[in-house]
Amino acid sequence: MTRETIAERQVRLEEQIKALVAAIATLVDQGKEAAESRRRGYQAQEETRIEIINMKHRLDGLERSVEGIKPTTVELERVRDRVIFAGRLGQGLWTIGKMILAAAAGAASAWYAMTGRPPP
Image 1: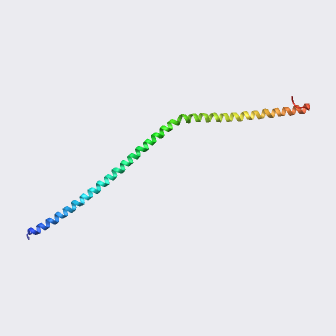
Image 2: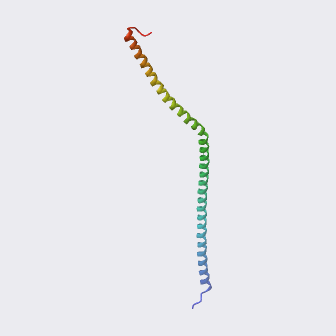
Image 3: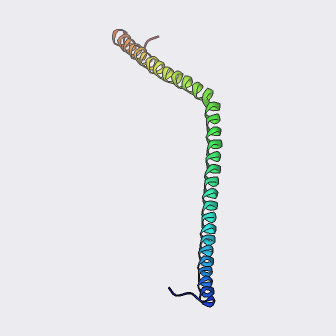
């Protein structure tokens, strides 16, 4: 076995130290990249959380609005039912009125046919 000289040993140690320094620099860069990636992930998560909170507030407001117009909706349904009933009642009364007018016209023409003069 040959013995290393001090100069050769020193050169070999310097190369190993340079390799260690390079490896540490790589690890530091990777740590910085990982920290930046985590920061972006946390930031995206926070933005999503804020959006969800905003949507929840909007949904709560919408639910309150719907609850607020519920009495109006119930009243509108009652008015609609009344209008439908009034429309049908009006149609029935109109039909009865037409029959009364037709009967009166028939009676007047019968009177005129029998007496030859207009009805009183």
